[in-house]
Structure formats: C-alpha cells, structure tokens
Image 1 (cartoon, rainbow, N blue to C red):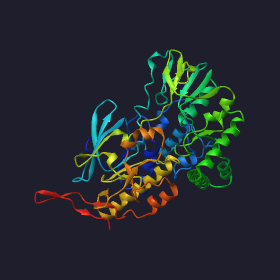
Image 2: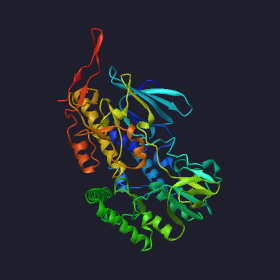
Image 3: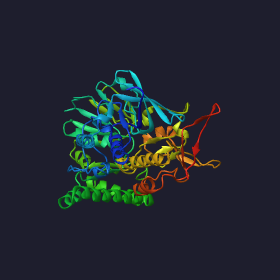
Image 4: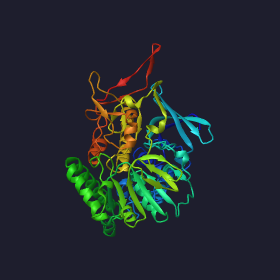
Length: 500
C-alpha cells in the first residue's frame, strides 16, 4: 500500500532475507518490517535454479541458520530439502504475512530531512508503488536473476540441438539417451555432470581450465552420532563449530603452504581416479582458494567418469557447429544438448538505483564498513557471504549487527547512522574481494572497495567477525549518529551527533 512506513524493509525472501527477518523479530521485537520479493515464491537461489541435481556446495550445518538446527540426514542437501527448511522457518516465526511477493525494488532514495528511504517497487503486472522505511536491508544476493554470464560463442546459431543455460533450465527437458556437453568447471558443472550421466548417452564436461575438486561424504557421521546422545540444538552447535574450525584451518593452511596443499588435493584426485588418470584435467593453474574449491558429495563426479558415463575435456571452444562443438585443438565434440554452465552475473543490491539526498550512489566509489555498510550511505545494510566459507555464517552475523545498530540508534535517540571516513586522512583502498573467479573479476570494477585499516577491511574469517559484529562496540567513533536535518532561519543544518 502506498505511503506505508516501516522501521525496516528487507529486500529478498531467500536464505538471507528470511534469516534477517527472524533476527529482527527476536532482537528488535517492537520494530515494524516487511520483506519485498521480486519473484512469486520464497527461496531465492534454491527456488530459481531447476537444473538436475541442484544442491548446496557447503554443508548444511554451516549453511543453515544459527537459530534453527539442520535435522535432515544429508549434510550436502538438495534444493527441495533446503526449501523445506526455509518454509519451516517462515512458519515457525510467523513470517507469512510479512512477505510481499511480486514486488521488485527499482530504486531507493534516502532523505536526511525525513530520516527515511523512499523505495519504489515494480509489481508483476508492471504497476508501481512505493513504501518508506528508516533502515533498508538488502538481502537480494550477489547475482542477477534476470541474466547469467552467457558468452556469445561463434556459430551458436548453427547448432541444430538445444542450448541451455543452467539458470534458465526448461521444464521437462528430455536428455535421456542424448549426448550432452556441459561447458564449465565450477560448482554448477560438477553438479550437473553426474546428475545427468545416468540417463544421458554420455556427458562431457568441457573446461577451459581445471578447478580443484574435492569429495566429501554426503552425510556427516560425526553429526549423526552426536544426535543420538545430545539435544538437537547442542549437536548442531558442536557440528557447526567442528566444520567452521576445520574449514578455517584448511583455508589458512592453503594460504600458508599453497604448494603442499595443492599437492595433497591432487593426490586425493589420484586416489579417487587411479594411477592412469590424466592429471592435466584436474590440475588448476592457480593456488587453492584463489577460487572456491568444488565440493562433490560421495565421489559422484569421479564415479560417473570412472564408469565411462562422463568425461572431462580440457580445451577451448573454436565454434559451435551443426552437430556439436569444434575445439581449438581441432577435436570435434558431438552433442545433442549443450549446457553453458559459464557462470553468474554479479550485481550490487539487485541493480536498484540508490541515491542519498538526491545524489546517486556509485558503490564502486564507496568503502565497505565491517562487511555490512558503506561509507557515506546512511541506514543501509547489505548481506554478502564469505568467499571461503558458507554464506549463512556471515548472513547471520550481518543481521545481528543490523539489529544492534538499530537498537543503538533508538537508545541514542538518533535515527540516522552513517559510516563516515576519517576527515583529513587518506584511506588506501583495494578490491573488496580478493578472488580470481571469473564472475568476481568481471564485476570487480563495479564493486565497493575495502580500506587499509579496520573497520574498513573485510575479515573473511567467521570467528573474527563474531568479535567484530557481535561483541565490539557499535558506537565505535567511526559510524556517525545524527538526527534529521533541522530547518533554521530558512536553511537546513544537520544536527550531527558524533559518536562518542
């Protein structure tokens, strides 16, 4: 309804947005809020993608919320199981009436005079409306739902078969008995290949360069054993921390001893595939964790290759032909279906236009504050997960911090909070994400920067962020608390109240 005013508006009803709503309900019980979701269903990624085998690429003991134990048997869960978990969360916390489906944020304009955001929404029928809020929490993810990264391969129009992008998988696509080529080597490709291999005539994973691939049990035996003797909440907590600390140890080891870590990962591939494996197909040119490792549950990708149902080819596309793909090497890959698992297109804030007091915000010129907010942008938070751990670990902490900030504004009687760079000082900057993955590098120029000192730097470290976001003082002398601009003698003057 037009002219509604909320304390908080959450954008996105996926894993992040539902979690943010629960934290707000628990920690700021008096606050009014709504969730706007561009699509007609909740679930975000887990409802959008329909390709065969869609599953988590992290364990659900860390991808699940810190307030709701994951109780299903499988730690590496498929999309339907994750959607069930999300719907249970909505039901348990009574969020059904808070979600407004089919409402896409087009732009958001901040007014310091009102201490409010005016958010323009486009409905499914094309009509427009607007709402206002004091705090805008963007939980819309990091990629475009409308388009993926889909290179224009030469000769694409000549191909007589079907070309599919995983983000837009057609319902009822029949690949039984068909020759399938999956272009890509990331998480989507390594999920698709074994999922399609049982029914297809053959599936080929065509990669320009290899990715580190690691097998992990689909079930966490340690977690299942703990559940037999401990309450579910405690078993979940212990398993969660076991996985967090193990993951952090492995990441730090990879960064400190990249050659040794790389050697061990490749040795694990040999153990899976046998002594005759062509290691050139499994040996990346970069160090471990310069990009995310690809997790495969219960060796499913390796098993499909060993069975002969699937194969890996490392080469470059010369052009599509009527019957398949001609490679740079001159080799021909015959195909009935080509799947372009070529990646995502990153976006900031769902591509909405953001402005502050009439001035457009160019996020590439802002500096991240605590991995949540941005320099010079008041009352605005954005959930971005870790590159080296599960998304929800950071999402939970982000939501907790937003709640702490809102409560601090209330206690000070100052409805505006703005991360403010130190006056008169030079702040060195570098890219927000130190990650060589293609989807990051394609968007790096449009992303915010990070600074050369705390709190303007990202941790990419869950235990450090617990201290940073859950325990360190909100009123840190960097974020400036203020009241709306007052009209005095015919002109506006900000009544800034510097953080004590």
